[in-house]
Amino acid sequence: MNSIPYGRQDISDTDIAAVIETLKSDFLTQGPKIQEFEEAFARYIGVEYAVAVSNGTAALHLCALALGVNNQSKVITTPITFAASANCIKYCGGEVTLVDIDPETGLIDVDKARKVLEQADEGEYKGIIPVDFAGLAVNLEEVRKLADEYKLWIIEDACHAPGGYFVDGSGEKQFCGNGNYADLAIFSFHPVKHIATGEGGMITTNDPELYEKLLLLRTHGITKDADLLKENHGGWYYEMQELGYNYRLSDMQAALGITQLKRAKSSLEKRRAIALRYDKAFDGTNILPLKGDAGHAYHLYVIQGADRKGLYEYLRDNKIFAQVHYIPLHLMPFYQDQGYKIGDFPIAEAYYKKCLSLPMYPTLTEEEQDFVIEKVKGFYSL
Ligand SMILES: *Cc1c(COP(=O)(O)O)cnc(C)c1O
Image 1 (tube, rainbow, N blue to C red):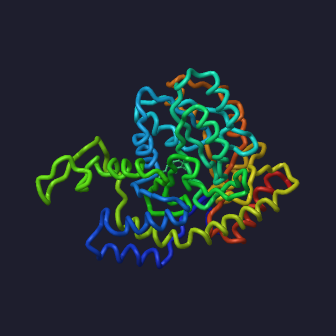
Image 2 (cartoon, protein in one colour; image 1 turned 60 degrees about the vertical axis):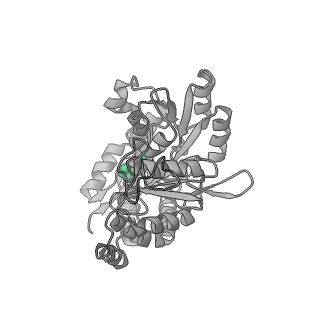
């Protein structure tokens, strides 16, 4: 048996051909493939606008900038996420307030977020960044209600959940990143995520003003758009109107994204089928998967069990490279320097002691999965 990682990209001959074709074209950095990728992605997600950027972290940073985060901004997010979900606020000088998770779902506990807001001064908090952790969609209808009461914006970190959805109060499927509840949503195309472009990211929104702002900030704050220019000296003329960045995606990466995206739906079905097989295998045991549902996008398949370290090492000895998602953010030295300490978020800490992400990717074979299941059960003498 070859070694089995927790996640792995799937690159086809079609993907490779698309990248080579772009290498032979006139455009290497931002060219026609970017717009094609953005439009295809927006259609897949069911949103008005999509902005391709260099990675998911850049996507978060641009969102925070577009929403005007500064040293007066306090923003709520979850400790069980990748560091970038919170770091984007720090990049802009803002303050991060973490809120503990719901033990059943691993997602931010919206009732606890409400308590934080109830105790805060009016206008103290500017926004909230819910994360569709592992691929389970946050109920954004609920978060929007809270956000409206306290005049917060919402950035949905949907890195784990392209194609995922929750069902709203009227029975409608609400796809992650569709912009119906969140102001902005972000995705990553890191190789372990659903769609791989090497490095890469996307921002989605239904707000035309935020969209225009993001376009400007993605390219140094520079525009050549005649409608936006304050002056016009001729064909060469451009203006730098804001302090932006170079957060562009390349056309080579976008070409890869376009062909990857064509398989996103079938890949998602494979992830869900793998999850179902794990669910069945662990049913009735003391190996407890995080809550799943029909809309789950299964970036990760997380179990919780006793002696996680023992299990992790036993699996490694069998060349199964399970992973831990995540070490709670408030335990990171950087966030401890901001005043957080052990014991601040007991549910996240209890989750961290037991969690392990089992191999989950579309090309995982049934044989490999059965091997993983056998070893996990074997560790617990089941
Ligand atoms: C991967 C990830 C990011 C960052 O994406 P990069 O493309 O690696 O910068 C942000 N948030 C979450 C939840 C992620 O999983």
